[in-house]
Length: 230
Image 1 (cartoon, helix red, strand yellow):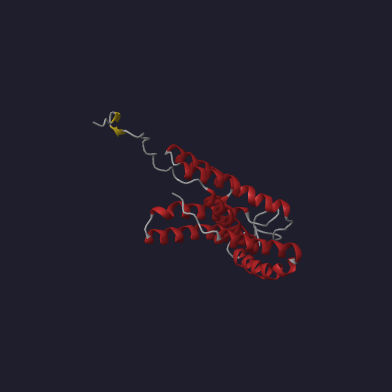
Image 2 (image 1 turned 120 degrees about the vertical axis):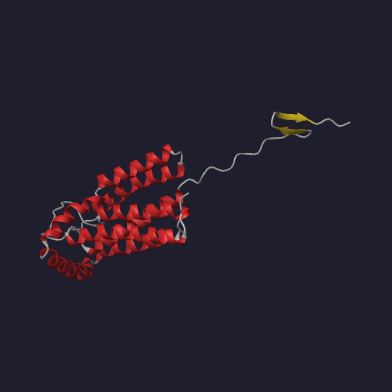
């Protein structure tokens, strides 16, 4: 089983993402008023902690595209071997569309990354690919686990996946690999894409069809028997 979020979830995420994208195209100076000061504060914080920066350079790769695709393929294969077709389909499609989604966004929108960051990336910055990958894993795990866990279990799952995605987003900001709006855009894109895939996922197989009977006959374990009227 896969939890199917209400349509308001992808619609809301898509609307906010569209507004952010429009602002970046039409009025980038407005976004810069928020991005610039926060990134400079993070730069100062990370510059005073070189050991932290070294750790984050490795930790951030947990959400690299290679890691994301490898985990998605593994989950798809496991569910397929267990004959859980809807879950296998869900994981396979998420693995394909999420990297394609953020890559398309970066390709279409020219959004330079922070200058002189602690890591150097040549591609455009919006949305953050690492953040999109991490948030997509978080939403996917939540939707897969939601139908089969208790209320306390759901709270635990929500806490863990939010911490995981938030950690990756924080690494991108502290390393100055992205602006804050890039990270927000990655989260919104993940919610949009994974929610839509979940809503389109095939349902579990239905119950077997009842045996076909004809008038004057009844079914038994050994096959249909004709009923004779005296």
